[in-house]
Amino acid sequence: MSSLFNTAKHSTERRLIPIKARTVQPVLSVVVPFFNEQAVLPEFHRRLTRVLDALPDLCEIIYVDDGSSDQGLLVVQHFPTSSSYVRCVALSRNFGKEAAMSAGLEQARGEAVILIDADLQDPPECIPQMLEVWRSGVDVVNMKRSKRHGESWFKRQSAALFYKLLNRLAAQNIPENVGDFRLLSARVVQHINALPERNRYMKGLLGWPGFTQQTLLFERDARFCGESKWNYLKLLGLAMDGFTSFSIRPLRLATLAGALTGALALLFGAFIVVKTLVLGEPVSGYPTMMVAMLGLAGVQLLAIGLLGEYIGRIFVEVKGRPLYLVRSQIEIAPASSVKNQPASLEVVS
Ligand code: UDP
Ligand code: MG
Image (cartoon, rainbow, N blue to C red; front, side, top):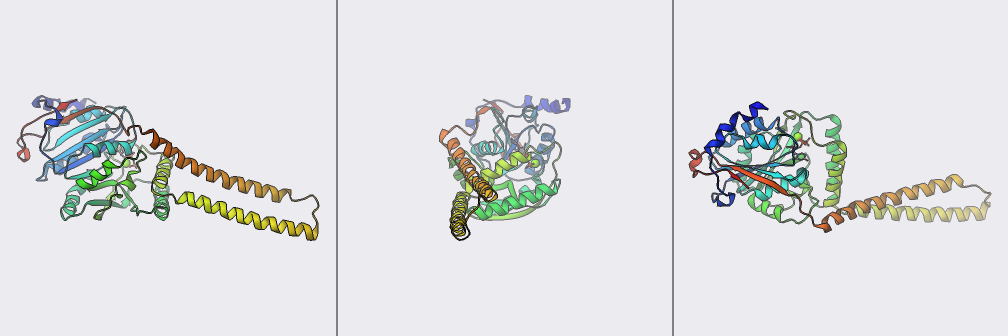
């Protein structure tokens, strides 16, 4: 860890004022949610600031520490001054990536906002191209993965299947292979921030406001280091959030399955009555009964489980708890000479 603190000398060059005192609006906000990414953060910040420093526009980087248990927050606090505002919002515990992104979007004040992962799977070098597309009048720049390096065959296939299924079920088109790495215009961010729901399947929500959208292709790198925070169980939960937030068709399918089995049961019942009348019935039919019973019980349990998925989410919505809680915030002001910005300040609140 000692190398992490080599930058401490920079903090002596800063002064403190409240965040609210800042009046300059950045052109671009880059929102970076992270959870236990201390090892990658310095390299991520180096690559990101190299890209942002080369832009003529004032930028801000908003790190959201999603309740990391490592030293990630300290690492960010000791980043050297760059040409951008660097803010770090630390949540009071791990609320999950969707909540951390929501926190970042609420903090962002840029005319354009980019969401990017901290693990360098989404290359910061794509940012100038995304800005160029935004400048041509596009509100949402989706970044589609043309290749997914470092991901298993099973993960790629299950992701493809999920998107196919989701698009079959959802009323709104949710672009395949587009993750959270996107650019959103300020008005789109404003609409997303205004959405009241707590079940936030961001890959769906980010496209929900609509407006003009364009998709760029990029090759998704493997993780710089460390492990993905998503195991298959968590991914299944996220997939269920996707299905239930964007479609009520599964409920309709349950109704259809019920209607179909009901109709089949009626037909089968009629057949048995006729068969008994014509051929008589010795005491048999145990296998038929078992198959019918188990089949029907299976369909019923499935339908009840499906209802439960929706009711569970209604329960979460009704409670109306906040999406996240903020523990602390800091801000590192840009170097005063850079991009003609007034000298100011690091803030702790
Ligand atoms: N992340 C987060 N909160 C969490 C889990 C993940 O903020 O509870 C962050 C993580 O640090 C990374 C991004 O979300 O910056 C993507 O996570 P990860 O790389 O684990 O997901 P994958 O790329 O494997 O889908
Ligand atoms: Mg990742």
